[in-house]
Image (cartoon, rainbow, N blue to C red; front, side, top):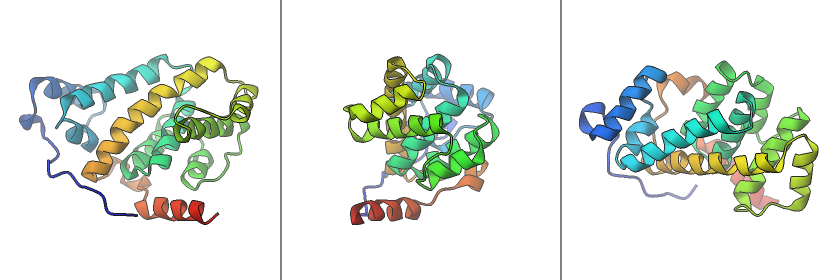
Length: 202
């Protein structure tokens, strides 16, 4: 892929951030038992960190999707945006916390259809919403609704698109190192580049 700008700013540690970011770091240590590297990157602009954490919390607690469906959405978005860190993190979350079958996670990572028809419709709809900038084709929406989802669910997809824009773009700018906790599911950018090349060769 073409070379892009890399931030000169560094990942911030707890003793380097303002009081608002420090409070979020401490909350993360309690809830996640760690301060993920993207949080340290976003702490350079604390309003991004605050928006990300609250947006993610609202999506997970208030959307009409199950935990498995949430990870399918987040993983699909991270895959489309080519975010190495989030691909590893959400693959791990899917494997160990959200009860997503490995074949579903691997299908998303490998750009293959998901065998579960409902989850496949969700992944396709998520991708369509992202790539169409919120102007999905009626046929894709029809398949989504026929799979058992609602128009409210269609709106629900907008929040994770916003949340993943915050984290994916921050990770691109910082080339955020994948935390050890997620290393086993690391996704190399070369895989994303190969997928993009394949797309343009069609």
